[in-house]
Structures are given as C-alpha cells and as structure tokens.
Length: 403
Image 1: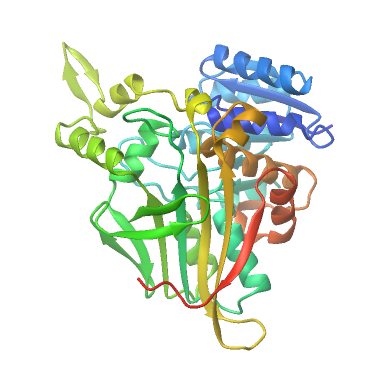
Image 2 (image 1 turned 120 degrees about the vertical axis):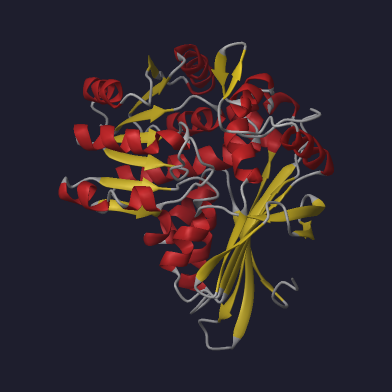
C-alpha cells in the first residue's frame, strides 16, 4: 500500500487529493490534515462525490513538531506532502526526520518575520535526510516545479547549454472581484512586494519591487503587462544549470491589482511586523488576509486561462548554433473547476504536487537526501503532465527575447 499524508487544506491541497484519488493505483490510502478539520472534511466530501474515494481527515497544527510527529506515527504514511505555509517547511521536515518518513513540498521555506524565501535553509537538511535513508523533494508545484522541469527537459532534448532563461507566469483569469489573490493572500503579497532579484553573470542582482515591466503576447490570453520579480526556482536553477548567464522570472498583474496593492502598501496594510491595536498585537498583512476573499472560493466565478512557461536560449544539441525554445502549459480556469472544484492557479500547483508524490512512491524518482525536481530525469514528469491535465507544447522561436 502507498499511504500518503497531505497537510494543508487550501485550494492546492484540495486539487492534490482530488487528483490522488483519481490515481488510486498509486495512492491507495489518502489522509488530509489541517489546523481546521472542517476544511478537510469539506474536501473529503467533494472527493467522495466526484470519485467515490474515502479520505481520512485530521486536525493538526503544522507548527507543532511533536503533534505532527504523533499524527504521522498514528497514520504511518510512506510520504508526507506539505501543502501548508512556507513558514512551516522546516517544522514538517523535522517531523518527517523524527518519524522516518519521506517529505515533499511545493514552495521553499520562508521565515515568518522576513519576506525572503530561499532554499538554503532546506538544503542544509541534506545530510540528515541522507543519513536516515529518507528523501525530501522540494518545489514540486508549477513555479517552482514544472518551470524547473521544463528547463531541464529543454537541456536534455533541445539545448546543450542554456545561456539565458526567462520564466513567464501569466494568469489571464477574471474572478470578478475588485481585489483578490488567486493563492494565499499573505504569501502572494509578501512575494510581490519583496525586492526583485534576477541571476546575471554569476550573482543575484536586486532591483526595486515591480520596477521592471514588459508587455508580452500570451497565447490563449492576449497581451499582458508582466513584471520582473524574484522566485525561488531561480536559486535552484542557477545551482543546477551553472552555465546560465542570466535567468529572470516574470509575472503578470492587471492595473487594478497594482492600484489596490499600491494603496495597501502606502497605508501600511502589507506590513509583516506586528502592531498594537486596542491592546492586542496583530500583523497588518495577516489581518488583511482575513478580510480578503478566500482563494479557494474563487473557483465558481473565475473564467479565462493561465499560460506559464520557459523561454530558453542556448547552444542547440544538434550543433546547429544558438537557438531559442519556448515550452509552456495553458490551463483553463473553468475546466480546472469542473474537474476538481478549484480554479486554475490551485490546479496548476496541486497537479504537479501529486505527480511528484507519484514519482516518489513508484520510485521513478528516488534518492537519499534533499533534492529539487530539476535533479531528476524530466521525462516521466513531463509525460504525467500530459496525462494528468496539464499538457505542454514546445516551439522554436525565431530569436531570443528582445528585452
């Protein structure tokens, strides 16, 4: 039996367990835990209604290593899939080490008191996992995750070297809200408001948040403004593709989102340091999260598509000189909702989480220690993307990006 414990009952957790239930030959027993058990119960009911599968549900505080370890001991899963908050990554890794269970996540650790998500904290666990014969797989979402696999697939099949890499993340969906985020508002706003960083000539170059904008024509969406920002796969890709001269990450934002975010920043609502209100200590961004729409509630109203991919330029494998390739996925919000009850942002992260877990459980990807997805053969992951609802295409471009 391949038992799995999923921790986190947001939209990504919902998609992941729906897709696990649809792959019962691999995931023979699924447990779902969260701080709020009622959220787990609602997802379990949706899974039962859609697939007939039964999901066990539990309440757990993922910040509490002892409580999480006790739950893992009671369930005895082969793998813990962390779809909780990035602040909790290290505690969940500690719980896996304490109980002798493999680990997977979709986003790098981020200290709660600093908006700086990086992998080095988790890479430091490599020897501890290796000594216990355990595997930890980091960043098995879309970005990071699929975007990293895209790059390694291009290097395996198209390019001998990658000189420049641009990751383009476009959400062309419209949820009808004046201001809402498509994944956890606290994480989203911390990410967007942090200084931008890109890899260039062997080091990271820091620039002001949202300081560089370009317009790009996205297939299935149309022209969109995209902004250069930092994303953690730049750190791992710079490590595992050391010849890269430049690597950048771009994400699209509409004018209304930028306007609202600017106002919220100007009035202090995006602060992550605590303030005293009526004698009670609160964090403004956490309060803002509480009053914004829950991302998992946006599924019924979100229409449009996402378009996320990699554009890489480098020396062609066939010796024909320098070439540029664009590999991408386009996902429809309404199709994602019809299948799992969640919009495409959750879908594009939850499906790769399931795929990474499947590859670990079947030993298609195996190792002892802490690994990023780009350290493994991309072909089985790419094949499962096509099979599991995230089909991709690859095209050769006439020239590198002009910017």
